[in-house]
Amino acid sequence: MLIDLGDFEVGYDLVGPVDAPVVVLGHCFAADRTLWDPQMPALLAAGYRVLRHDARGHGESGTPGGWFTLAEMAEDVVRLLDALDLHRVHFCGISMSSMIGQHLAIRHGDRLRSLVLSNTCSVYTPEQRAGWTARFEELADHGAEALLEGVMVRWFTPESLAREVHGVALMRAGFLAMADDVRLNIMTNLRDIDTTRQLHRIGVPTLVIAGARDVATPPDRGEMVRAEISGAEFVLLPDVGHIPPGEAPEAFTAALLDFLARRQG
Image (cartoon, rainbow, N blue to C red):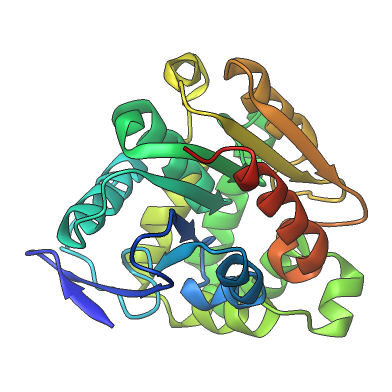
C-alpha cells in the first residue's frame, strides 16, 4: 500500500491484530520491505502486528527531493506512525535502518517500546571512512554496475552469495535501480554516521545484533553501540555477514522474538 506523507508517498504493509503490539521493521540500504519476508510468519504467529515500510528512495517510496539526512529519515518513521495512528512501537532496523533507529531513539524515545539495532555502527574508523570514499570515486568514475559486486561481497558472505540467499537478488536489483543522486546521498550519510556521543540519551530497552563475519559493520562497531546504551544487550550470530535476516533467518528471528517477548508492556 501507499500512504501520502504530504511531500512524498511511502510504500508500506501493516498486518496483524489491530490491538496487538506493533513491531516496525526497517530495511537496509538498497533493499525494500520485502527483505523481512522470512521473519513475517514467526512475528505474526507470535501475536504481533507488523509494520514494514520502504525507506525514502527505496522500493515504492518516493523522496521529497533535495539532499536529506538519516535524522530526516527517522522523522519519516515518526510521520508514518502518526499517519497510521500508531503511538508506541518496537523498532527493528538493520544496517541503514539501524542508524535511522539510533536517531529515532535519541529524538523520539517516547514513541518506542524497545529498539533492535542489527549490523549497526555509530561511527566508522578513519580507515573505514577512507574505504567509503574510495567507493564514491569508483562510483563517479565507472558507475553503479562497476561497484555492484564489490558491495555485494561486503554485504554477504561468499557462501550466502553462492546460495543466493534471500536478499541477494533484491539488493543487486535495488542498488542498480536507485536514482544516482539518492544512492550517493545515502552512501554519504552512512559514511558520515557519528552518533556515539548521543547514544547515552537512548533510554529504551535495546538489543544490538552483529554478524561474526560482517565486514561492512564489524562486530566491534556493534559492541561500541551496545557499550554506550545503558542496559543494552548484545547477540553475536556466528558465521553470518551483514544481512542476517536473509543469511541466517532462523537464528536472527529467534534472537528478535526472544528479546521482544521480554519487552512487553
